[in-house]
Each structure stands twice: as structure tokens, then as C-alpha cells.
Amino acid sequence: MLSHVTFYTNLQNVSKLCDFGWSAICKDRRTTYCGTLDYVSPEIIEGDGYDDSVDVWCVGVLAYELIVGKTPFYNISRK
Image: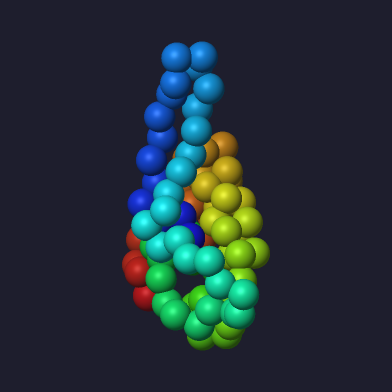
């Protein structure tokens, strides 16, 4: 999950995105709840098991936010 995102630029002007705050190596599907509400996938919200595909969801949300300037599911109310 991309919960604590860090950007940095190395000397060759290549930006990198990394986060290992919730990282784990698992062969089975996970069922724990973790992540930031704006980036969390439907599988996690519904309490279903999930795998590393939730990371692709997070990257998609991040890409949308970088292009549009707000998260795709933004609402002034958290409800």
C-alpha cells in the first residue's frame, strides 16, 4: 500500500516513488485494513481478501491526482 509516499530525485534527475511502510511478503491473500482512505482499494474497504493488485489501484489513484489535482473520489465530507 502506498500509505507513506516518499519522492526523491537522484543526481541523474530521475524521480523515484517508494514506500515500504506496510510492505510484507505473503503467498496468501491479506485481510487486514491498512492504507489512506483516498487511496485504499474497494477490496480493502469491503473487507475482502486482497493481493498485490491493490498497489496498482493506488498508483492509478496517484496518477489521477497528479493529473487532475485531486483524488478521484474526493468529497468534502469523509462519509
